[in-house]
Image 1 (spheres, rainbow, N blue to C red):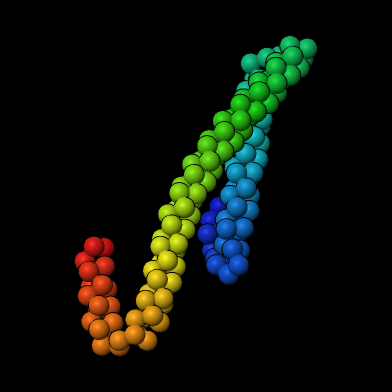
Image 2 (image 1 turned 180 degrees about the horizontal axis):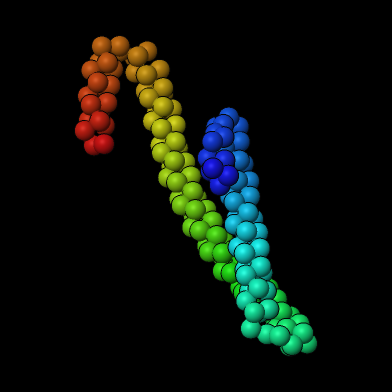
Length: 146
């Protein structure tokens, strides 16, 4: 129940869904890291106390254990950040491609609208009936090419 709270709040107004998802992902990762750290520290200390009875050696083992934990944690964080950066770069490239595609379609639509407007103004003033016939043929041939 505690780990599912981030799925319950959905508000898609003004991009707050994305903000909540990012915050909830960060909270979830932090919570999992916190719990895993507590479990590791507690049980590894108990295990070391069971097998090592010399206090000086126990202190050295716990220091080494702590350094190993920090090194492993740092490595895992690095790997996760690199993976997320690569995913973000891929998403950015995909978004850029979609923007270019939609921009090209918009420019084409604007050109067609402008051309049609000029065609309508010029041809209608000259001969309304001939223009209408040509316009219908042009639009139907344009639809067939799409």
